[in-house]
Amino acid sequence: MVRETAVSPDDFIYPLFVTHGRGIKKEISSMPGCYQESVDKIVRSTKEIHSLGIPSILLFGIPEYKDEKGSSAYDERGVVQKAIKAVKDAVPELYVITDVCMCEYTSHGHCGIVEKGDVNNDKTLKLLAMEAVSHAKAGADMVAPSDMMDGRVAAIRAALDEAGFSGIPIMSYAAKYASAFYGPFREAAESAPKFGDRRSYQMDPANRREALKEIALDIEEGADIVMVKPALSYLDIISDVKSSFDVPVAAYNVSGEYSLVKAAGKMGWIDEKSIMMEILTSIKRAGADLILTYFAKDAAKILNG
Image 1 (cartoon, rainbow, N blue to C red):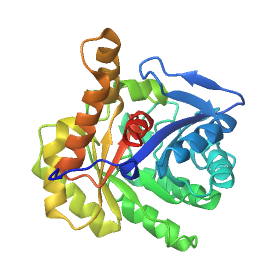
Image 2: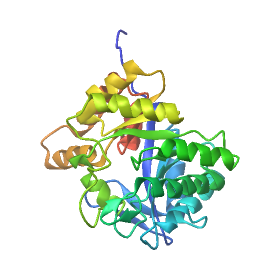
Image 3: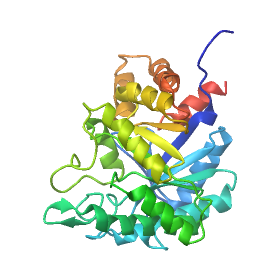
Image 4: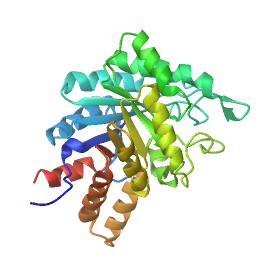
């Protein structure tokens, strides 16, 4: 009767990995229960997701080919673009959000155009804007830039408006830390960098005040929702953002957080379901309005009784 924090399936956004081909459903070895799926299989999965009361998905793409400029990211016949159309046709009530980044599509695995060993921030903005517009044209309900390039929210907002998509909101990965918790995701999305790392454009895990600066900049540029990523080791950041800004706050319960629980649960070292619900409750309690989590289906089944 006096519980202060309640978690609901309405809070969840479920990430999905769509790959090229047909009839493909390949389990991700480091993320049990998660799969790389072709468009036809993604459609089946989204029907189940919707039936569980989960209102939204986030699509990541695994393209058929990669190149230096990640051109398949903004190809209107690309795998994400096909998946958007198929899902919206099959489950129109499901809210489709798309990841906007280049790392899954570039041959070098970095989040933008690489010149002389460094990512060129400004040249990357144009490609991100093209990718976002291609997703909107395919029927996406929201775009979510995860690249951490400076100025990308403004560039995407301007491109969407110019293309006639002024009503498409932007959920910005505004405080995205250079975290070791992303390891399993890089297997899932086949996006590990071929050289170096992403610390030059992702945030230092030791920095707290910087997150508020990054959030403020993205809101000023037109972000409708701001995200903190990862979630579990950054609950203080989620709380700071929630108390400092009057916009919806999302938190990404990332792959490493998921895989740790799954591995310990498999070994019998923890009560997996209880730990899962405690983690999700802590993220909501810290101030997250939306939780992106690979636990969404499992948690929804418990919450639905």
